[in-house]
Length: 372
Picture 1: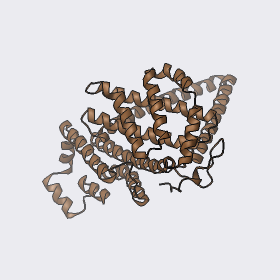
Picture 2: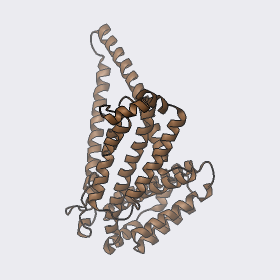
Picture 3: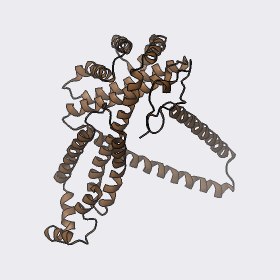
Picture 4: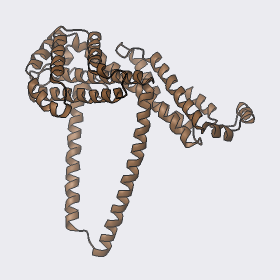
């Protein structure tokens, strides 16, 4: 349905009588020329972002509220097809028009994927947070974490106020000990964002401060997870899941706060960065391609002049090959570990998943969740 509408609007096929009538009123060439004007491009960009944001609000009004698995799968399949549908429908359109339209629909598709993933994480974490024995084990493991050492290591990188970090640590422990619900945890996370970003309200550097906080939050949480890993904490799997959820929800909150601060929709905020990322990737690809061409030319010249490859170059190539192979194996092992904990591409609790340490089995306390 959506693909057909796009094809009709952008006149991908001109065989029908209705489209021939459209051509009489406004020819395709004039239509395309009109779309290339900057005010029209700006209007399309703003309208698309607002329209797609409205669709997100209808499809996923609350990212924490349970969504039927059939609806989640339908949303993800829909998001997966959007970019290809639009790209095929706009074949022959001006390049600048395609960039505006595809950038907006890419942001829309990415938002749908992120929000459905966040929702799935929320339902998995809800089962953990409702289990008293798991919460008690998490508290015991958390109390063994050397937060003073974590602060010392992270302070040089993050340069956060020590009193604020200590306050967040105590609040986290208290909230965990009270065995609060997922919704209460969400309120606590919102309070953290308010506490940290309040000094920047109404200032031009608010978006930058918000992004910096997101980086610092992620860095501190990774340091805590690292400590739990080194101590072979029995509740490592539970903490890993909670950390994934809180990082994603924190990103969601920051995204909305920045959008509100600059009077834009969250999709518009992400869409601008998607467009920037595509441009940077294009530049990087050109640089890499030019570098490869220069390297190939230099190597060919060396072979012609010397009749053979330099032994040192062969040695370096072998070292690089070995290094890449080692890195690939490491990534495979990390992916396998993550898959065993949370599943791919979504969180999946299997009956055979056991955690490190005392061998706590999450599946004994939580229901199976099907991957979306």
